[in-house]
Image (cartoon, rainbow, N blue to C red; front, side):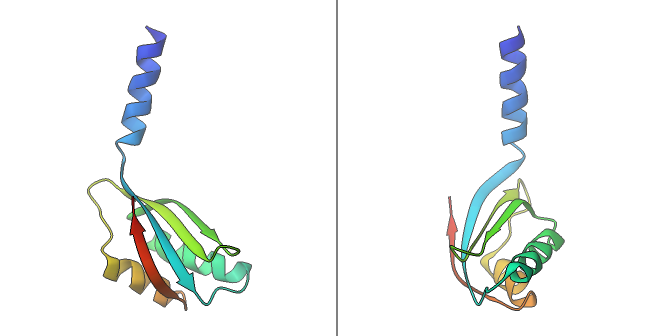
Length: 91
């Protein structure tokens, strides 16, 4: 009984996300860059589990199910932070 409960919770938590997105970002040089990009992606209210990596120059997040971010919205959020979204990958 416990296993089925845990599996049910896992399935419920996974269903909250629509897709994983990774973005190559140009122009990041410091921790403030990471914070600015994270803030703008959070402001869309369509991205969860945001991770911005200065070393790899990538931003990654999961879209909220039913609230897909278009490539245009992603590019605009990153541009608002002062950087450029070079390439967007969806998984």
